[in-house]
Image (tube, rainbow, N blue to C red; front, top):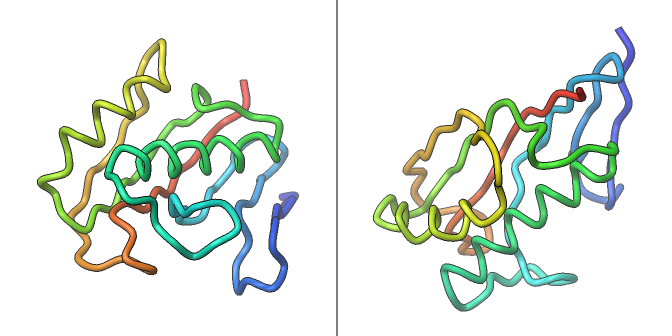
Length: 123
């Protein structure tokens, strides 16, 4: 079994993702922070866009796209944000949506509202 690790910041105590056998990508938990900071955007919608774009960025590191996600876990500090998150989430997909869980997590790092973790498979 081969493994290729992706890390955009080697000082962090984890990899952004690992590609196994050139096919399956396991993506670590991602937050939607303002670029270059540990700050969360002011609005729920801005943060939802930021966290999905962060997942897109990690997928791109492995030459992959959102439509290659086969599983997604969304951790939310407040499950009442489900509809607002979904309004943004749906704008990123044109075809079949991946299976997912929307999990109430309690507080997240840096006061984030959402953290996404996923698995993608190359075609």
